[in-house]
Image 1: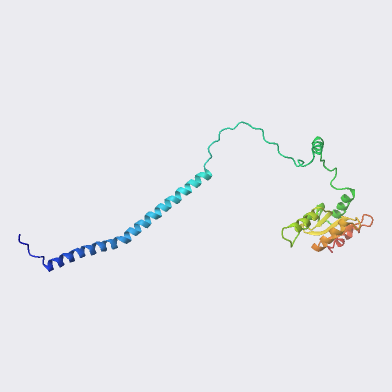
Image 2: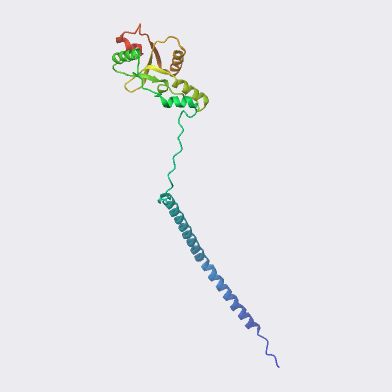
Length: 223
């Protein structure tokens, strides 16, 4: 058998160039399509993420606002007894409180002397407002202390004290505190101390030696 002539070098080179050109052409196509594929992928991912968010939001909305399914009716059970404020007392005391009327309204808010003092202040100070039997916590507040034990103690001390009359302007600004004269008692000294520290005038009214009715404005420091 006679072998054919060997392939010509030019023919081999031509085939190699054709193959290389096809590969390069395919690579250029891939490079040209890469941005399109990337954009398409980003759009698909964004839509998928948006759909997931919408589904989650819809589910949360349904959980929050949709009516809950009706529950099966449970048999009636007697409600547990609610503890009363006297639950910590011994049983004889609890029985005594329940068996009797433990509280009753006062016959009068003010006694005779307090009512007389208020009437004199109202008539002698027509341009002012007069309030009777006021707690010191309505007049003063604890300032300059953070919340804590010392602040609570001071607030409690104010809450334990009342004054007979509070004289205010028509705009309800406190002008003076007037108490019936009780002498130099610990309560009076405490009121004088705290009111003086707050810059509020504290006066004691002596029923036996009252100031002239026409001079009440000067007496409370308004003239």
